[in-house]
Each structure stands twice: as structure tokens, then as C-alpha cells.
Image (cartoon, rainbow, N blue to C red; front, side, top):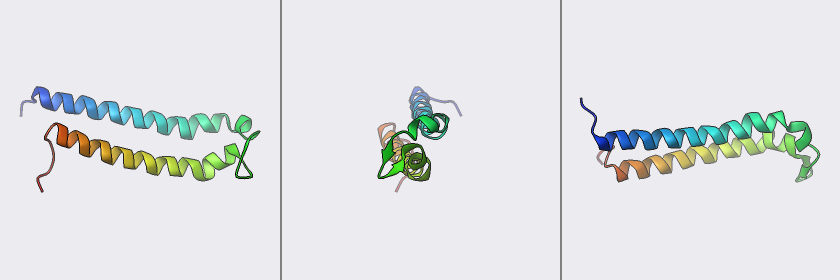
Length: 86
């Protein structure tokens, strides 16, 4: 099957979206962990901020990232007319 320019544009958009969301995931999980001691100097809801990010904030962020991915991919499917027929 030969890929059309529309398929290539769809794939590029998909890769940009995926890379962007993975970058946010990396920042929230690894970079915030690296700076946990510095973040613990601040508090959020009477918890040290570094602890809160790992206990609640990272999980909430991951769920939000999944929702963004679903909405964005549905938008891309409609934009490029690629996807399942209902």
C-alpha cells in the first residue's frame, strides 16, 4: 500500500502529539523526582510539594494526558478522514 501525502501528514501529527505528551509525562515523573528535595520546601494542602506530586499530582497528570490524547486523536481522525466508520 502506497502512503498518500494525507497519510504522511496524519502520521507526522500523531508523532508530534505523542512526543509532546511523553515530554510532559517525563517532566512530571522524572524531573520532578530529581528536584523532590527542593520541592519539599514548599507545601500544598499541608503536604510537602515533592511528596504531593508523586502521591497525587503525577497520577492526575497521567489521566489528564490520556484524555488529551484521546480527544486529539479523535480530532486528527476527523481532520484527515482516517478511522473507523460508525
